[in-house]
Every structure is written in structure tokens, then in C-alpha cells.
Length: 563
Image (cartoon, rainbow, N blue to C red; front, side):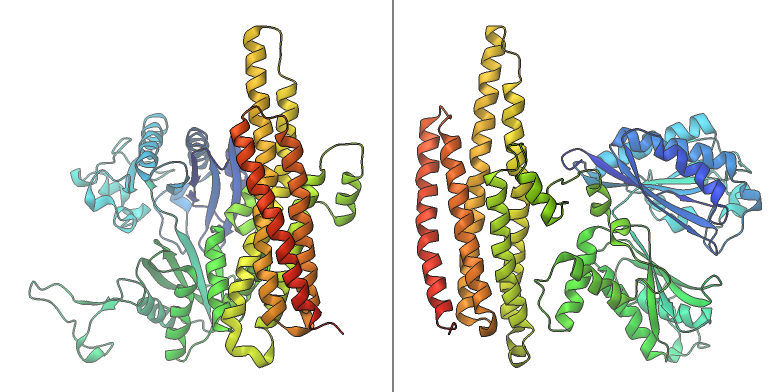
């Protein structure tokens, strides 16, 4: 899925209390081929369910249409009540570019979806954000003003003629807003109060549009107006943040409910920090927070790194630990479990891309290597040994950063640990890729070779696959060689009690370099492009010599610490 055009769709349906109705809608999404249903997040108080799915443009638009159709059949808006603003059974249906597609292209798909909904379902549709047909309709709040109850009058006004569909009130389905937008995070921060007014005070402090300015800064002071007679606003602390306060009976607490519309302007964790600071100033306390829907991995990592820096801790810890720090720092698990595998988009998508070798236990990997199959073989094992070497160097860096007497050096060792994690991840990727490169040769061998054209195509495929099978261990050599600078630094200046671990890391790195070098040489023998082969073999031999020398340097440093 990585190289194809991917769109995320996050429709909000006006039903959050009846699991059977929600299932009716999500089932039609899951049935569309080429779409992966990522998350279903119902809310009882809001009586609203946020659904997230992803796929290619055509598949996503088809799934969205079928969901809108089913929602109109199973939800009756004339009977709907909930805390959240809404105007339709499918209230909003944004399309979001994830990869391989531009915002302009996504806006085009939003128009196609809106046209079909209007024509086939007779539901009034308004286009918003980057799909808007006029500037005044870009803002969803403006489009939804008055909510469902205002639609009969609104639809009769020329300025509110729908972009698609009839200008006729649909009592059961209401109206739907379809848009194309950047990634949005729906995020709620919990307070130790039941007061909506006090929660709103924090929300007004935080949100971009802030609050209306009053004379003397008093709540009951006269509204300050500009020369045109318009109210003057005091902007809030956070750009691209919309926020209101509300009381959630389900949890018995007030929350600040936020939409972060540009996470570059205000990152996830900084919205939390702004709420925390405002709450403290007002005698309140933030007790935790709640993520609605899914987030990109980088959002969680950025949050984790931010709080690690505040703790003066190494950033080079495993990814799972960084995420755990983010969860605990913002109390994302206060109201319920926070499962990264379910809440992070990349982890959900990775479930469709199995990694057989990396998913194995150590004993299973050993057994698979010892079986009659030729893969995994020396190339995969070399990459894995190199990853272990990087892991050991990273461990020493993290232990050094955490050493009490070196608190002032935590950033220095954190930098080494971060580089170690990069090398480790690269080498683990090569464990799988080495087996894939072997399979590419097998696929080429199996190509037909009856006609002259088929023979030529098979020969070309064989040469390309063999080059690939040579390039992979060459990259393993490069990454394993990079381990030495880490291990040398840790043997020389890291925690002296762990110097031997740095030495073992260097030994693993040398084994990885020399093991991969054997694979480079044996695979290069079948390549016809002799100039390419000569350049690769020369560079590989030079890396092997460097590995020998560097290993000796590291071991000499370690020997100073060994009795």
C-alpha cells in the first residue's frame, strides 16, 4: 500500500448509542474491496460515531457512498439528540490525502462523491475545506450553522443552495458536508471539574479564535468593539485549534473538546500543554485526555520525544517505549485502554504487510534458518547479527544517558542512542529484504523460456534480480560498518561498566560486514555487467578492511576496562 495513492476517509455518523445501527453502517464499508476499516469510535453523550478507513481513491469513494446510503436508511435525524453539532445522518465526510495523491486530486474525488450522493440519494450536499466551491463555505462551522433544525429554512435561501443534490429538506437524512482536508486530530482533555463554564474558560484560552474582549478584562464588562463596530477578539494560545467545553455524563467530568486542524502549527502534545497551563492558572487540574479516532505514528513519537526531553532522558529508546511515554504523559489511557496497534495508522496498515521473519520468536527464527529451505540464509543472518550489534551500542548509550553522575551529558548520549536505533531499524529491514531478494531470483527462474522473446525477458529478469540480491548485502555492509563509530564512542566514553557490551557490539558488526561480503561476492559472480560488479566488489572489499581495523580499535579500548 506504500507506493499507491492512498486516501483516508473519516465520516461522522449521527448515531453513537445503538451498536446494531453502527454495525449496519460499518459493515458496508468493510465489504468494499480495497478498503481497510481502521477504527470505529462511538460516543454515547455526543450520539455520534467517528469511523476511519483507508484505501485507493475509487475504493474509498465507493465505501463512503455505500455508508452514506446505509446511514440514511438506518438513522432518523428527526429523532436525533446529542451533545455534538450535527446536520445529517452522515454529518461530515472528509477525504484526506495520505500518500501518492495531491490535495487537489482528493478535492476532485470529493466532488465525485458529492455528485453521486446528491443524484442517487437526493441528499443535499455542501462541499467544505479544500473542496469548497466558494470561500464562505470552506469553514465547516459556517456550513453547519443552525444544525439540522435550521435546514428547512436554510435550504430555501439562494445563498445556501446545496453544491449537489436538491434544495429540498430531507427529514430523515438531513444534509451532508463532504470535503477534502488536511489530517485533523479530534482530541479531548479531561478536567477535575463538572463545570462546563469553567471548561469553556480553558477552551477559550486555548483555541485560536479565543474570546470576545471585554473592558477591564471582566466577564461582565462591556464588549470592546473596533472602528467598524465589530467585537474585538483576544486570540487564544494555539494556532489551528478549535475548542469548546462540555460535560460528559458517561465519564462524569467536563472536557475541553478540540479539533487540531494543522498539527504543524500546533502539535498534539502542545495542545495538551496549553490546556494544562490554562487549567492550572484557573485552579483546575488536567487529569488525562482522550484521542478520538487514529493518528499518524509521527504525532505520537513527537509527543513522546517532547516529554522525554522534559525529563532529560535519552530519545534513543525503542519506539514502543517512546509511545508509552506519550500515553502516560498525557493520560491517554485514563478513560480506557490505549492500544497503539489500534490507534496509530501505520500500525494498522502494517497488519496488511506481514513480516514473517521479524515476527518470529528467536527459537523460531533459528529453526527456520536450520530447515531445508535456503532462505533465510547467510544474508538475513548477517543483517540480524548487525542489528544485535547496533542494539548493544544503543544500550550502552542509553545506560550512559541515564547514569546519575552524567545528568549533564544526557543529550550527548541521546544522540548516540538515536543513531543506534536508526542503524538497528535499517538492518532489521534488511533481514526481510534479503529473503525477498532471493525470492525475486526464484520468480525470474520460473519465467517461461520457450520463444526467443521469452528467453530474452527471462535473462533480463534474472540479471535484475541478481543485481538486487547483490545490492541488499552490500547495504547490510554499509549499515553494519556504521555500528563501529557508535561502539567505539561507547567503549571510549560511555558507561565503563558496560564497555564489554560495546565490544560485543563491535564483534557483531564485523561478523555482519564479513558475512554480507561473502554474499556480495557469490551473487556478483552471475552478473554480466562487469563494470558494475568491479565497482561493487572494490567498495565491499574496502568496507571489510575498515571493519577489521575498527574492530581492533574498539577491542583495544574495551581491554582497558577488562581485568
